[in-house]
Every structure is written in C-alpha cells, then in structure tokens.
Length: 457
Image 1 (tube, one colour):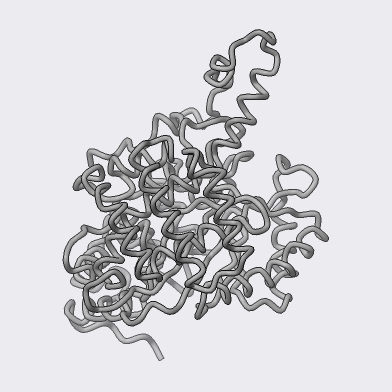
Image 2 (cartoon, one colour):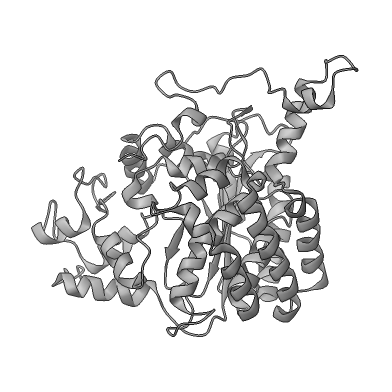
C-alpha cells in the first residue's frame, strides 16, 4: 500500500517534535564508530572496490550484535545497539571488534582511526542512488562534499535526550551542553591534521570539511528555550537532498525545501511522513536529535580501543548528575566566545578545529570536564581498564594542552627536520613547517584557505 501523504504542516511539526526528542531518565548509551579501511601491508595503497565489496559480504556473515555498514568511500561503520550501561555498550562493541579485526586481516585489510584520510584523495566506491544524489547535491558547494562522504571517519556518541523538567539532566540543559561541550570534545580528540600526506593547518581537518558544506543542513539549529520547535523549523526549512524513486535517480529540484515540497505537492509527487523521516537522515548538524542526542563532532581515534575514551568521557559528562553540572559550569563561559553564530562556524568551533587544546579557554574547560568525568566513571560502574584509559589520555593529552593530532604533526615535522645540522636549536626544529603544499584539484584552493569561506552567507 502506498504511503499516505501528510495532511497539515502542524501534523508534520507534531511528528518531528514527537520522534526527535524522547524524554525520560537518561539510562541508555550507544556509539557509532567509523574506520578508514586500508591495505594491511601498505596503507598508502588504495583498496580496490572489489576487495571492499568482498569484505562487506564476509563481515555481514559474522554473528555481530552491532549493525555493520560501509560508507560511500569504503569506511567501515559499526553502530551499537542502545545499551543500559556504559560497561554493557563497551563489552558488546569490543566483542564485535574481536570478530571483525581478524576477519579483515585475513583478507589483507586493516582499519585505521583517523578523522580524515591522511593518504588518499576521496574516491567513492558505493553507487547507491542515495549517494549519487548526495554527491551531486554537495558538488554545488565544492569539493568538500566528496571529502566528507569518502574521506572522513568519526566516533559518534549517542545519549538520551534527558528529562522534560529543568535540571542537570533536563532536555534544555543537555541540548545546550552538547553544543558547548561539543567544541571541547572536538579539540580534545582532534585527530586529522593531514590530507594526502600534507598538513592542512588544522588539527581536525574533518571538522573543517564539515564546516564547508551546505549550512542549511550541517549547521546547528538556533539555540533557545524550545529545542523541539527550533528543530522542527530547521527540518522543514532545509532543502530536500533527494526524493526516493523505485525506477530512476533520486533527484530533487534545486533549492526545494521540505516545507515547499509539502505546500506545492510536488514535483514529482506529494511527500509522505516516511519522506519526512528520510529527509531527517540527510541532515547533519553537529548534534542531531534522533529521539536521543547524537554527538557527531569527534574524530575517529587510533588503536583497537581508542574509541572507548571519548565514549566514556561523554557518557560520564551527560549521565552522571554531578559531572553534568560541573561540565555545564565549565563550558558555560564558552558561550560568549561562540557568539550568536551556529556551530561549527562560530569562533569557538573554529578555534577548536585549528588550535585544539592549545587554545587557553578550551584547555581550561577540557581540564575541568575530564576531571569531572574521571570522578564520575566509578559511579557509572566503569571498569578499572576504562578508568585507566581515560586517566592515561588525560595525562598524555589534556593536561599538556595536546591532542592526538599533535602526535602526527610531531612525527611529520621530525621527519622533515631530520637533515638539519645537529646544532639547530630545538625551537627552530619544532617551528619549521614541512616543505610541502596541500595537493588539490586546480579549481579547489587548499583546505586551510577554504575553511569557513561561506561564513558570510
């Protein structure tokens, strides 16, 4: 039976309000982890699409509890089921990875945790109509769309929306906290300073790429006392990326918003409630309400268990009342730096992308937030191994004003200054940039020049 068209705009708004913020006691946690897939012997050698398709077939035969999918550029994504505790979430995903990694190695493939592909230019390997339409849509904004689709990877943490009532675990507080703390998480876990072997001038190139896309579907909705109403308007006024079809391309008229599509009834047909639900999946703000809150700003992390630290820290700061209150107090002053512009194009998120924790304000907030998280983890029942991993990350990076991207840059600069005379001062060695330029298509300026170029729009 064909889907029924929606009847009124009020019905559409009520539907969005109902499905996107489901309130109640915060008790569930989830994580979506992406990895760049590479040749196990030579990461710089692009993997042929036939190998990726064969890997997808083999992995889907494994008895996994998480949902396994592949992204347009061949990135592997593992999405956990909602768990009732941090420990249960970690245990389930760890068990799935214990099956996936050996299977990948047996096929000569490795999984790397980088926020942005450090080796290759973006190359799409999936040809689903959704991705054909997405590529065509984002091409109107330049090359960043293909880079986002095919060359980025993240750790996305999912937390409940919170209580209806005000307070540290209330919906309004958690919504605001997510957008301020998001800049701190961006900075602390920045892990993508290079592209095609060259530094881009940012510690998280992934975040810069996201900031260059269509602002009507990738910027945060306006902040205010009514998150539901703001989100409903954001969704209805966003351009339609694609209209699903059974027998043709999923094209959509350029500039057509979902509200306009509903009011005009076409082309090519009137929208349904199912079309609205699908439209929501094509919107990519840094915090996306899906009943729960999906935090989308954290770069993929290196190592078999690198994803555990951002998951644990975020869960602690959202779901432990004392830690949530301390985190809110730590990040509230950042609202003045952020100003009125939405994330990720406001000054706060720009500074997080470029300087990460070298920025004094972000560093101060990160130190306070990580301390609160460490104290909260025992109350959440986190295992000694998880607590030790968070403590090690805090000491290695946060306390020192560093992030994982700094390790990559240190290694790169060390290689480029290896031939300097032994008497060259350390200061000079550390400040000497690599003698390279960012390779891009002729019509595409370097990432560092492109960043935030559409802010005035």
